[in-house]
Image 1 (spheres, rainbow, N blue to C red):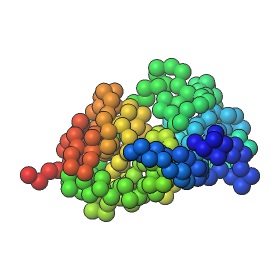
Image 2: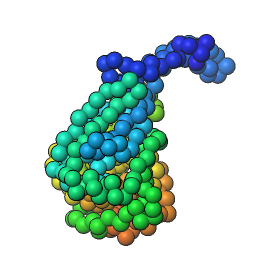
Image 3: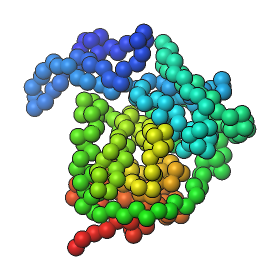
Image 4: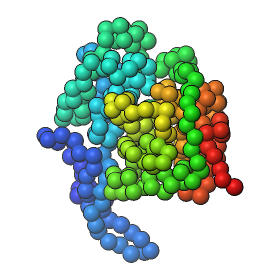
Length: 282
């Protein structure tokens, strides 16, 4: 950073919060120094408020927030379908963003009875869970006739980088992409938090009425338990991650009937569960 001042980011923005900022930095490479402009991903507190009561504060990229709220509400089991998100209003504040959500009273009461709330991290997996039963939620088994060739998977993995516009600028965000065999990557969402990116994508898919049995998800992160759980929760049958899965994620995917692929790169992949959906031409 230059003199400790040129890199100072504004804490309050009257016209809202951008997804990135440009700052002046000092770069050293090969023993050579240069001063240049660098693009930095923003991380903004996002407060989700249900029926007037704060539930969770997430640190997230301030884009696609209605989709994020819907995806989070569904995958966390707060509501059962998109129609139960009765309204979503977004308010810029000096220290972050409030997303005020209205859900049916019985859904809100169920949320209140669980006593779940959380403040803090860049995305979260077991958001606000205070008991083991709340934390480890078993989704219904997924089903569907999806089949995907290894060549189609490789093609999608090759293409995903060109769709990651914010990451091209900053190198600091995760992505979750929706792809359909024969069509490639159709939609993508990015966020500083991997769970947030997935919730944004799922919210988009649900809001637009996509056939979730027709495609699969690629995430540019590891496949933790929560990523598998969110994917299976909405009935998607295949999740490919560019990094490793955890043991708990593998067990959940196996029990849920989800095909879990890890270390998915241009020229390799490892299938951990339900390999019947991925075909290989030898």
